[in-house]
Amino acid sequence: MNTLPKYILIAAGVSIAAFLSWYFRDIIIYIVISAIVAMIGRPIVSKLTNIKFKKISIPRWAASALTLILIICIVLSLLLLLTPMVGEFSTLINSLNIENLGENIKEPLSRLNEYIINTFPSIDKNFKIEILVLDYIKNFASIDTFSNIVTSFTSIVTDFSIAIFSVIFISFFLLMEKGLITNTITAFFSDSNEEKIRKTSASINKYLSSYFIGICIESLCIALLNSLGLIFIAKMDTELAIVIGFTSGVLNIIPYIGPLIGDILAVVMGMVFHLNGGNTLPLTLYLTLILSIFIITQLIDNYVFQPIIYSNSVKAHPLEIFLIILIAGQIGGVIGILAAIPFYTIIRVILVEFLPDKKFVKRLIGKLNNEQSDK
Image 1 (cartoon, helix red, strand yellow):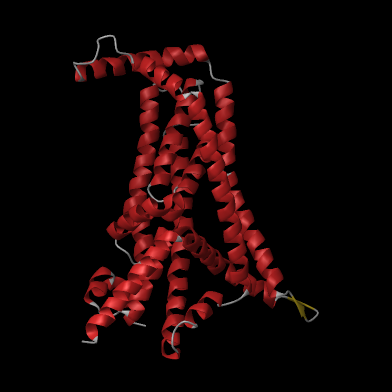
Image 2 (tube, rainbow, N blue to C red):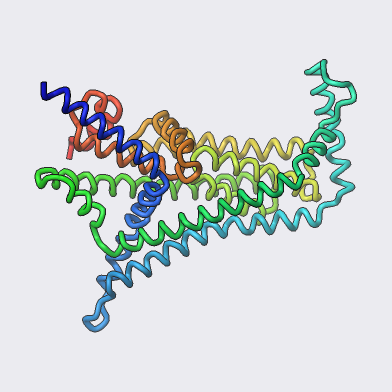
């Protein structure tokens, strides 16, 4: 008699929590990202507060502010890695020989048109894909389209500015007040659960720290492999190859989407470089080499780097990660994709600590459960 109302209340509570999480998803994402920033910066704050000048130590608020400034500078430095690509691309475009461009793409376009006509007999024999592209560009480049782009861009900039300010503001207080999240959470639970909550918090810090360190190493390895491949196999200009390689490494932080964007940028930059007379290989062979380098690097990432990171840090199966990223992307876009794995890790650690005997928990996260049990 008492069991049914209990389960009904639990189900209602979970449903309400799920709805509120979805409704306030942006705020939750800000808090999660801020918690990650605080977790990364907390050791730096501790080091700064331990420094003493004639028995005068740095206040924690000042140490937190300095740490936050340092993290912001590092993030901006990573973003500035994309700037050389823009400059290099602009230089190549400005020096591009239009006559050579026409001669280089004439034959490939002719073959492509011939292939399309032969593959689809219903298409007009005079079909030309270049005309179709030009018509599409003319239709796209209308006043309404331009207006929509400006409106969308303004909205994106506004949302991004709010997100950056929120993350910086929340991160500062999380850094300044040690254990703020853990203490806040424990206030809603009985004293008997406080030890479990603090143990869970420590485990989350451990796994997420390992994950972020692994991500940084992975991105560096991707950048080096792509740069070396472009230099020694595709015979690309060294400076351009390094710019493309490290840009691909930075973009690789974004799961699944980032590597694809990196591939496209590499092919486009390689094509412009070739059409500008930077390489003597046939254009098709040259672009094939570039794409092959990035595909091989991605395979190494998928089958070597990622399994090591996911196995040794978040203890998750690649299929789990893929599905979680898809769901997070649907809910929160690119920000959701970036926060998906850390957020999922938090949920898994909580399940292991509070529901270790449940069958679905054992099957879903048995590897993580076993490690927790061995402690």
